[in-house]
Amino acid sequence: MSDEGRSDRQSFWVTVPGILTGIAGLVVAVTGLVALLYRPETAVSLGTAPISATTLGPRPLLAPTLISPTNESAYFVGQRSAMLTWTTVPGAAKYRVEVECRNCSKASPGSITVVWSPAGGSPAMTTTSSYLFTWTGNIDARWRVTAFSLDGSPGPASGWWAFKYRILRIPVIVPT
Image (cartoon, rainbow, N blue to C red):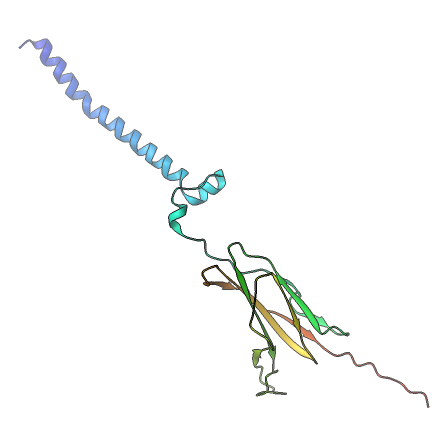
């Protein structure tokens, strides 16, 4: 065998590890780029849907954001109802509205201890993002909303917001 043939084979085997290292680096780079592009948060920012989004299942529901009546609202004249409103939650099929009043249960009328108990008709279920709550007399109330998905599983509840109603007593002076 000639020396020239031997040196060609040796130079080939000397360069193979370099070639394989280059190919491995290219595979790692392409894999990293594909993984970056198909992460859900990157796909959303790029406007594309990740392949794995269908296997992740439905997104968890968010808590509704309460809108009205605003927290610590007070009613004084004539009004004996409040339209409770909140933001719609993507993926929600219905909402549970809980209204509680302070010391309004028959077990604790006039009690000094604060006892929150369900107000009449509470909790209520609705498919809209509003609920009309009515009452009689003075009331200290609080309310919150929970969204439910199509399969009936609840999301987190909103925080409690409070409102109160006081009958405004105007003294009547009768001339003598």
